[in-house]
Length: 634
Image 1 (cartoon, rainbow, N blue to C red):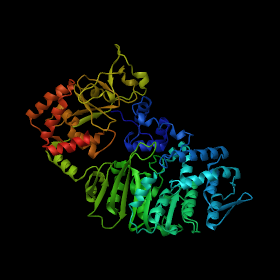
Image 2 (image 1 turned 120 degrees about the vertical axis):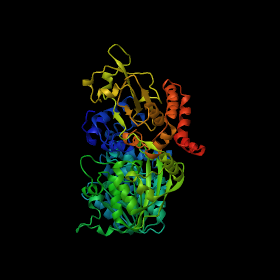
Image 3 (image 1 turned 135 degrees about the vertical axis):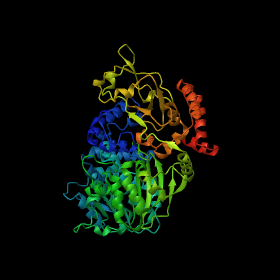
Image 4 (image 1 turned 30 degrees about the vertical axis):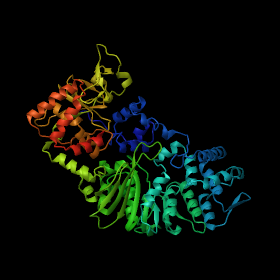
């Protein structure tokens, strides 16, 4: 195949008209290749445009959006939303600078302040210091007319069940583009409280290393009653740090010290161990750390050269995990909210190894798609720094189940994959399936991508004529057979952007499969058909296995079960397919499978279940095991 040059996230973001953070999230979820190419990115763009990936349409153009909105993570109460909208509208009409707006909102929020001659007079010196440090050049003044209009509204919000009123207002003032460019999303209070409640009641110190306006800190205060002098936070957003300090002082009315919330680059400036670093006292001193760190990896520059060297990755949240390990006491706890990709994507194997070898993993929980406008599902990993790791049982909480897994299993998996979907019963079944003598596709197959035209609108035609031939895309693939074509193309290889060798398309027999899919869907082709790059090509050569037998196994419930439970991705990847076990079978069994596969290829879908039953027998699956498999893949 033609070798294609990779591109960075910045170029991809410009092509897709989204932020780099969005590109990175799509890479983590599997919608974009981990190695970005022009062709792959343009294919995704085309899929968004034509509706094939409708869920992504809402993300396109976010990075340049000037719209602001109230995050539903904070509240769904309509009366509260109306009050927030009024304050936001008033702020936007009164101030051009968001910092000046939050300066005045903070004044309205604090009960113990008086305005005299356009100057703030505070009851506590700590409050004065916080406001003065934020307004160090005296750029902002209390706006009496604005304060008159919003103070009662802010009081209403404070009486509601909204935990972080300042955070709600700040997030509502930020534009959609601001949030998307930063790649960070503030966290639902219910999830924050669950992460904090996971900690022991004996914790005495708490840190959020990317604290925002202090939502995790407020939860730690509420649920664990941490003393104010033992609360720490850090963030790069100066506005958020200011509001976090106000939140702490508001929670502790008798506390008169500036909270230890630092406007700082946590990875490069907090507790570095360097001689002149003023926060080195934090190293090895924290009882509990919880946060929702930024997600994403930079292709151009590293957030921290030190942690990149240690991790072999530029993934930001992995760096925050490693930083937190340095700050925890022995037996200290940390609980991170993370994208689900940390569990199994190869890029994150080093941080998984570190978590396995340096911490006792207490629990891993699924939360599904927790953030408005973010496609990626999220999980939490709660762990304790410990010198004694094994034996340890990890509590797994999926969206529909609760069970335990031995931590040493994660140490033994390839790339230390955290295969949390595999409880003990499922693991026994997987072991049984792999115990059958088998071959794999590794070293026994040829692979090819479909054609990247570079311009589908120009090259694809809806009606055939003498110069054109059918070309199939992913949505044209059914189990076992290709649907009737809906697109036609003139096969002029030199005009296409990316194309495999002719021998792949013109093979006498080949399998074609959906590339972007959470299920295995393979079809047989003997008509030398062309495919687009949403329909990849496999030509198997497994010893003593006919191509139609291979097709049967790939479409079987057993292979669906193994693929879903082991890999759980939205793309069908060569490396994953190469791990599936193709049993060694005799010629009579093979002939029986081929007989029914031929009927399936002809469109007789009643044979699907017959083929499935034959394959169940080959793997010696019991009726109980059938139920386990079918319940997972249905």
